[in-house]
Length: 191
Image 1 (cartoon, rainbow, N blue to C red):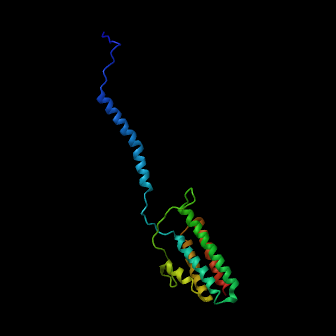
Image 2: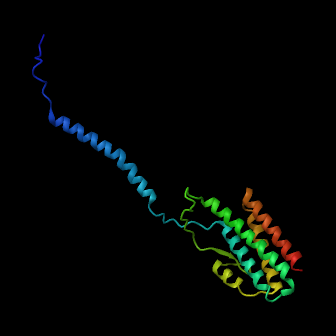
Image 3: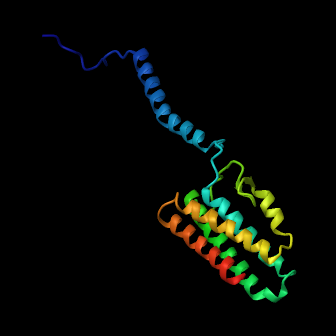
């Protein structure tokens, strides 16, 4: 049996200790560093261009109809009550559509919405073909006759009805309600 002296400590290999410490430091740094790099990469700007929300075109049409109804009051002051009602209702439609679009995009804890880059937005034009939304918004500020506004509301009604058939749940109900309101405005208020 071999006896060890208690006075002399066992020899320590300093190279292996240093290597183990270095290895532990490296593992510790990577445990913190890799998630930090991943988090920073996730915070980087998202260059993805998303398709516009299908409801965005309906919002543009609703705001254009409201502006056209307000502008039409200058040409048909005798229809002030009906045109004011249409402007108010179409603004409410646009606001409801915007609320739904924002709900889908989401809201951060501080109340801001995320940056959500979208492609160009088109809406149905007078002949049914897609036109840039900016053209519809610009044309809406020009005074329109009651007949022109009626035609515009019919197009909005048809567009909302067509989109309602492709959506589901709340969105389909919202679009169907908007379609029905446009039909009433064109067929009852402007007759």
